[in-house]
Image 1 (cartoon, rainbow, N blue to C red):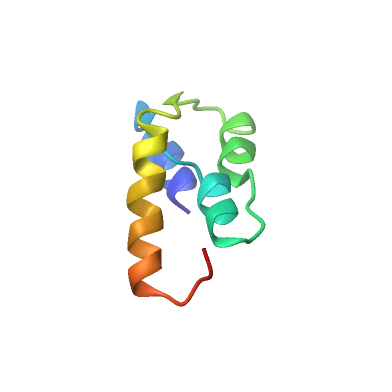
Image 2: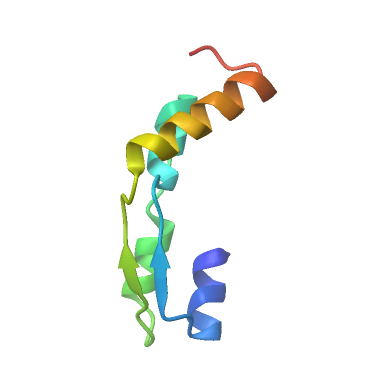
Length: 73
């Protein structure tokens, strides 16, 4: 949904640390490349910068999910 909204509103740039795949790996689930598929098949292509402070982002996510849901780490 978020990727589609970015294309629809023509948001120019996306910068993120941890991807959906990273989060799903952390939680022991399967992730998807849905955003990549949306961006590749749209007429508008936002600039995407991935992995900024990735390790730090994963630490924050791991801490959050460790304290807020029952997941075995």
